[in-house]
Length: 347
Image (tube, rainbow, N blue to C red; front, side, top):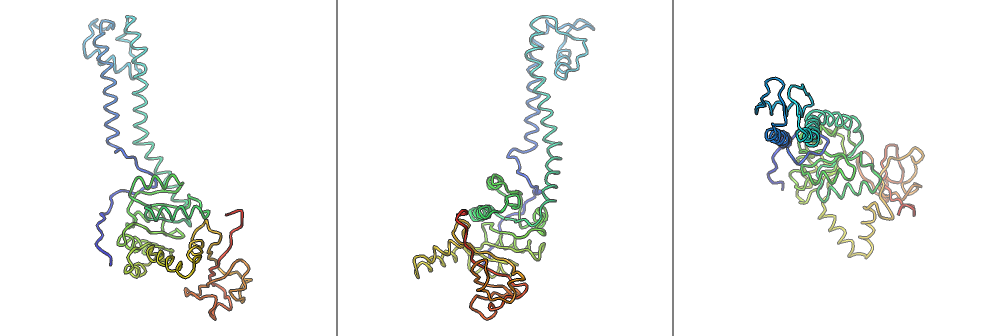
């Protein structure tokens, strides 16, 4: 039975990018401190070597004059009212103040980039990604099962740019991004997050949040936003399977039950479980494929198809095995599930 959902809703705005581990304001104050420190060093040296400076206005170099001269030197203004006259003062300006000036300018430029340009760039890039998201696969949760599902999709030839991973863990998102996937930090059970990844335009969705209650909530949210979306969800408690289907899941996978099927199959023959695993994996010698029936196959029995070994058809949402009467004649709109062999060069 589903327990209480202890996960608190996130207030993140959800962008298709990876967030820095250092806060934006923390970075700002760090840079301000660096600028102040560099200017302070220049002011201190100029003050102790103020004998090397000449004030053309009153001939007296005060502390305020030193601060003034340092600031106009670092900002490259240079009015000429205060000038270095000794070799030591000029060498300090040439060898120390000039590099400090470059560092200060770079810090200001970097800050402007992080707080203005980068933000604009990220929003523009996110809008481009969202605009191109059509017929993609949304993966909610990138834990062990979610990451294995993505690896299997990539093994089957899915372009990583067609996969969007949603998670709230920085490390998991970074791992997904290294695979080439689009990533979003956010709560997949919220409408805003799923709208950001254009779930209504997705071809399918995989839900593996790590908790049955959270996964079922994600399914409910996704089904409300995308009534025709194919949703596969992972649940670990058998009594939650029916709840997941009632929430709108198209497919409910229980890893414990599947493991039990493999174990039971191995008792009836040493190669049964091996073949079942072969069918499920992209690296196996055979694979299951689902496709629509062609016009040339209409009227033929399921066993007569030439593309593979037909094992089941789906007609109006109902499954029929190859031995059943309905499978003796393929009709328009039938969905065929077949076993196909893989060419030797693909193994």
